[in-house]
Length: 140
Image (cartoon, rainbow, N blue to C red; front, side, top):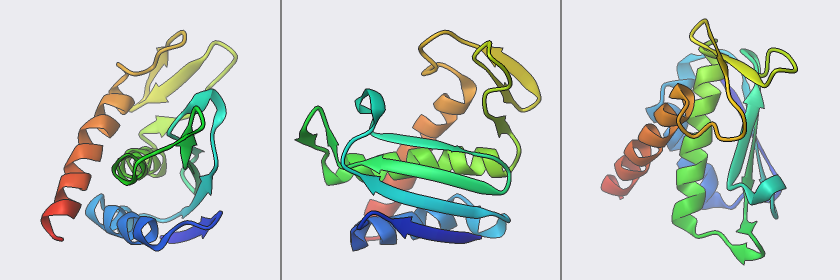
């Protein structure tokens, strides 16, 4: 696994990212993960992740609606997006298949309108963001 950081990612975020990647087993997978810190993201999201089974792009926002995002929320967002990275690299999650706003999850096609928060890949990412963050806190 290769990981690269862009956009002046602070050391605490780099250290957490490396911990989270190991915790989630990403180190045993083939591929490349690029993590970039951005001032803000479209729709004022905390983070975005997309890619395929070889290369993943993760963007983390430093502010939302012009207000700085807390350290805890940035770290939880990194963990959340790294879960998506693992899903892509394991070929469990495949991005939009066509213009019908559908995604493939573990071989099944899911269609949704605007809110994907209750999809299986998002539920898994929400679950593990807390587990990884709590594991990080417990070792400090």
